[in-house]
Image (tube, rainbow, N blue to C red; front, side, top):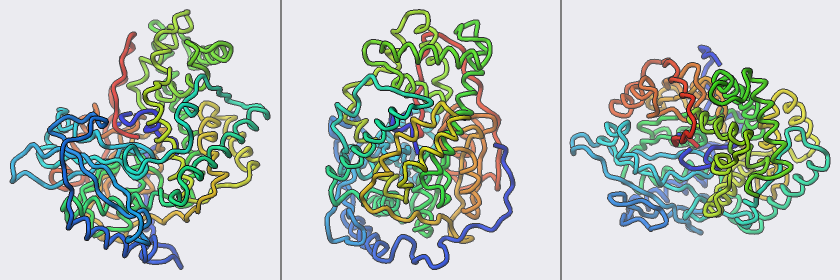
Length: 533
């Protein structure tokens, strides 16, 4: 599932009452414990060892850019939990101690921003942010880089310089020749993953990300896990709840991935592409409403035509030699993730069409200094999603499904397909996705957060996970589409999250919050970072 984490780790439907019985934690004939007996024993052993060792925290390496009082450490986890005595890898961890008194302290709160491929090492810095400070008085803020990410046994599938080479093409309705080129690139990328990672490649997957969480919990000296996951972080957080329901204390799932086994991950990406078209329409309507500021058109159709003029112009001549149609699309995809990007993107497009490309170059030019991190993030994304479940092997299936979808959702469909196409040529073992769910009263109350018009994780996914986790509560931000809503500008959402983390109270089965205020139409706007990946 394409994720904002791939464009920056700091990037933050009408609800229907469902009365169906929760899905079972395991399907008929499926091995129990879920995920395998050998792996379950391996996690138990690794957690005992981690609890005995603890974490030796100290000053963070300069590369992390995490100043004191944030401290860093490393937790050793098995590469393969079925062989806990075999190869181990190191997971990097960051921590800021709680700001409150001893009597206020409730343990550690682990955070994951999503991805796959996002790092949460920055999380302890949020103790200094006003919205988080009541929570920071109760919890140590603990971030970490999941396996494969950054310094945590980093994965790579290609040379970073060639991976981020610009300008790059993009076609909403690709020609046969363009498709052949992208098929060859996807096959080569999958081969690069297999060659560079070797026999380790199959062990970078969501089940192991969930198992790693339990070892981290033990290493921190916590009997129960307090966890906050956004976007993809909700999926392996839900896997954790399935695998270790008795180890959960407080769990917040922000912008929820649909955990339905049949949707992981091929169908999820098709659903996501359709949702991005709707969100792209939200931005175009907003720009049209502010035509007096941006002069891009008085209707959404006219705004779309303005964007198309820019795309065609960049096809003929890249801005600054680096911003072509691919870079334009990657930059403007961000308006689907957060409305904090709306004004800046409209301003850059308007200026470019008037002959000034400076704002567009600032917005869309790839940063050479981030090439290695970008390639690593994409490698982890690809490995996890390709390993998690079986993908169609026949190009005709991909071509049929995406051609059909692109007729009504052209903005993101093919770019999303190209990103995931290496999975069609994957040589590592692909596992069967786990059936997520918990038995009644097996879990403490959990809190789910979702925006009705979220494109990256469409709202139906939150409804589905809510159904599968008995006793959970779903907080809906009506009429909004920003991806990652906890501790943002919506005070209603924040009250529910803070009350839950501090007291364990959930707001009944469903709660609703009004939409956040639309962004102001400004020029020279700067984008505020969010949290979800």
